[in-house]
Length: 279
Ligand code: KIV
Image (cartoon, rainbow, N blue to C red):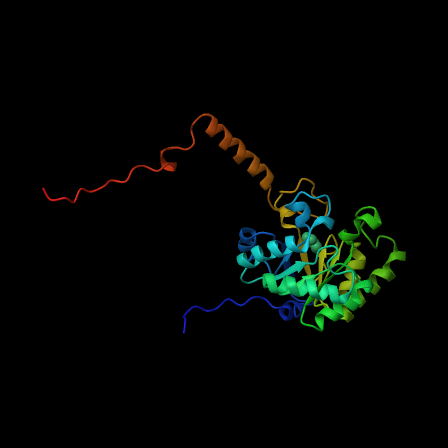
């Protein structure tokens, strides 16, 4: 038997068991190197449909397809060995019926090896959440600000800032939990409402622009690294990689133009050939 201990990947039960305990650390990842770098620091990596804007330069998440999510999901699974990997179901791949959602979710799981999927919607998606979880697909819910509704809502608006909105959002949270989701993302929800939902749900809440009282937090990794063109106000920047990349690009261009790169250490010399012929 090999002396190597196999590293075990975090399971959905382990995430669910963290309710009310140590905060769950989640980030997005779309590529193998980023997943490898974040694997030691996170409990959960989300292959978010935000990949549409972050890596593909699209205006919204609407243009991303199942094929994109499969390709990025496979890359993340190659890079991450410990974190639970969840993949977003893209717009158009789950809303039509529970059956269509199951077909596409099972395809995502089979092609990538991911453990779970996430999709947007509270009450209106409860039947689909139940259908999938009963058939072996762990689901992470997503309520509050739902970016895939951008064209219906006419933009991205934080919800729950008026108490009249609370009941519907609370009902969404309850519906997602009762349908069998193992956790739920609370996006762009006024702080006191996110805190209230976290208190009454028995599944973990993962906040983004929500509340420090949520059971976990998620951010778009490129935002916290300072790589995004526009950084939302709820993001704390932990690095300024845009500036570093700009400086590195500038320094490289200067070296190439001055013929300072490549230097002697960056080129291949000749190999010495020994003459073995006897005289
Ligand atoms: O697509 C995404 O990145 C998300 C967020 C919750 C981070 O859904």
